[in-house]
Amino acid sequence: MEKIIIFDTTLRDGEQAPGASLNHKEKMEVAQALADLGVDIIEAGFPISSPGDFAAVQEVSKNIKGPVICALARCLKKDIDAAHEALKPAKNKRIHVFLATSKIHMQYKLQKAEDEILRLAVENVAYAKKYCQDVEFSPEDASRTEKRFLYKVVEAVIAAGATTVNIPDTVGYSEPEEFGALIRSIKANVANIDKTVISVHCHNDLGLAVANSLAAVKNGCRQVECTINGLGERAGNAALEEIVMNINTRRDIYGEIETNIRKDHIYQASRLVSRLTGFVIAPNKAIVGGNAFRHESGIHQDGVIKERTTYEIIDPAVVGVTGENLVLGKHSGRHAFVQRLKTLGFTLSDEQALEKAFQRFKELADKKKNIYDDDLRTIVEDEIKVVEPVWQLVSFKVNSGTGIKPQAEIQLKNKGKVFTGVSSGDGPADACFKAIDKVINAKAKLEDFRLEAVTSGKDALGKASLKLRVKETVKTGNGSSTDIIEAAVKAYLDAINKIVSE
Ligand code: KIV
Ligand code: ZN
Image (tube, rainbow, N blue to C red; front, side, top):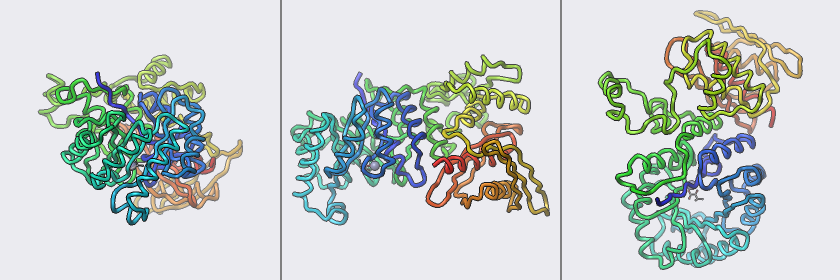
């Protein structure tokens, strides 16, 4: 078996996606999920960029066992010092140094000539090497770099000690054949290329990030940089789940190539990243979208019943999707509930959260005939809050209907005291949000608001997700209930509590 190294950059490039920022605890949750998923390397952040990034890299280095922990640095000594400092607690670490090499970047962004770029790349790889044996170098915008210069830089950084050379398609400009040929040509034209691992890092501006990464694999690259759900700058990065499942599904093409990814953790990791970042997954998204394994047409349904592989190239259970399973009902006990959660990948060590989730399950079972895995996932995710709620919902009342200006009354608890807020609004949810704002005296701006049904049927559990801004802070909030207004109120309070706790 030949291994493809999976280098996950959800916490670095992924978190650079506009509006995707995660707080410290959320980053730790994602890092643990990545370790459970079996990624080989976690790029945990860019330590010089902010104290928050520094602290996140440091804490991931301290607490996450298994993967190599990587930190990003420009070709500047102060960046490399910060990366080294933040990575100190890690058992296995990597410093990732980058510098642009394309004409357009060198001329307009850096205002530096080729000779200087070459010197800086070599000097800084050698500098990082003093701290760490494992050094990666990325010639940023490699796919638009003149080949002659790219070969020269790659050869020089390998001679300076780079153990991995990453070829980024920084602006997602390449086409698969072209990108595969680029990797082939680097192998053919860089004399010392065998002394390093070739990596690729593809962006999705033309929707080709995964196709380009796979073309590179076919041409000898052995590390792929990717993110959960393809999160990342602009149109995002290559999606980890798609790379892994292509390699796994098309054995006829990829032969003996494998990854270390525990595929049955894919769906869980995808949901976590979506919930924490507020980036909703499109229903038709490959592998992890809500419709990825749903068969609507009669002919397809009939085919799948007769033989699953007629219309399914991946068994959903392989990637941890069990959403349509009818699992529990009103008479199911605590033991069955806990067992099912374990199968879904949740280990609730907090007894209180477990008890609350179980009570939610019982309440739901009273209202809803059939409880599916996705219902369970949603109520448990609802109870695992990354911050202790400062404001708790006691009750809410809404009056709305045709020709009535919606009115809401909200009761919230803070430190044992109950506060009441009343407001009208443009709709019932808006009236509730305004009543909450009155109680806590916040000037919050709703930036995104979505409602969806978790499963099908009139009694389906509703899930609300939103983004809320208070001054410079933007937080996501999630809530669920069979009453969609209650789900919206819970989501709003979830975001408020995250903002207050910061
Ligand atoms: O897209 C890019 O070029 C990057 C580098 C820092 C690897 O993110
Ligand atoms: Zn990138």
